[in-house]
Image 1 (cartoon, helix red, strand yellow):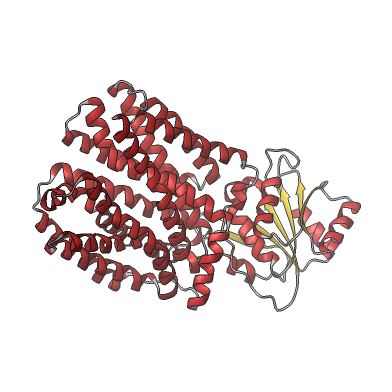
Image 2 (tube, helix red, strand yellow):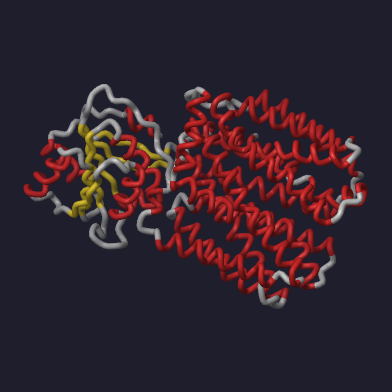
Length: 535
């Protein structure tokens, strides 16, 4: 339901572009005024995403999403009846409210889906943007509908969706925040490195998809002489490929580290853009390269949304998606503006494609340079729980089972550390090598817990008495030790260590495809409260 709404609202949000030539002819607009008119709803959509996300978390998506649909329907009706340029500009701005469907819909998806499937579900939700773009381009190429009639039909569909959403949507359980708490959460999110990273990745992938949607027909027409109708149908096919790739990106992140997937997509994208910059032969080179660009952008976009879905606490899903969507959409305007400026300057897309390829290379190299910690650090804080009494918890992890979920793991461990004395035992085939997960795990915990001291120790199996004594001293001093041991099963070492330091519980964290991270009790009196809250 939320995904269908996102398709509909994204189409509405981008509505001014397809009917722009008709509006320009009717009101006598020059190119600059037409461009500003098309950008107006995009900018408004960027601005309303943060408050819409906050309201979705506070009031529920069942209220916010129908309200957005109703406002968009009224704006579309006004567009069909408007007469005069000032009124047209005002209506175009109101149409931008449709962009608020992203955080409201994402909040509904995250709260309705089990933890282990949230990432994939949000990547399917993101694919709706590509499907809407494909449908919009195909409709412009095939359908010949009078503007007023088409707008009335769209307004009717939006009103019907608003009624259906009220009847069907149900918000999952979640704490309701007071207004002051909600806006302080926005401020805290803006300060977090994870927000900046995800916003840039969102902007690069989403901005690339928007640029393909807007410029691929013109690129094919001007570079290869293809007629407008086949060029628009080719662009629609490319958007369809990107939609399928977005869903594939969400699935791939269940098996590979998301940052590795995104970095590979950026590297591939840079290489393909460089190929296209030199106007290669259409059939044998340009067509596969354009298909590859669609796959790379769609996979990256789906991976970013999957990462948000996996790590965003349900009570903050709307706010997080709104903040990242707003910043990312602002960043995403860069490819479109760059291609516009370069095309107007020398009449060719070559320099613009080279500059975009350079930006993709910088992004890929940045991910590679930070690969030691960024995968574990890109996660949002799990909710902290006030402890009624302190406890000592030993957590065991097996590297092969959690390598693709380091961000999720560090968020849960950080939540445990707010109420427990904590020690982490991690079984890693390469405990002291760069290929192991020890260094990324420690770096990610330090990002989440800047006021804690976190140290890694490579220990024997079983630990030597001197190592056990050192670990106990660290715990007594408030340090969080991360004990790296060889082998595949960390449980025996964790049990021995728990007995030596008189721990209250041992928890083994593993990942389930449906339920997400699951704590498995290893001692009789395990406390699941912190883990359940963190999930």
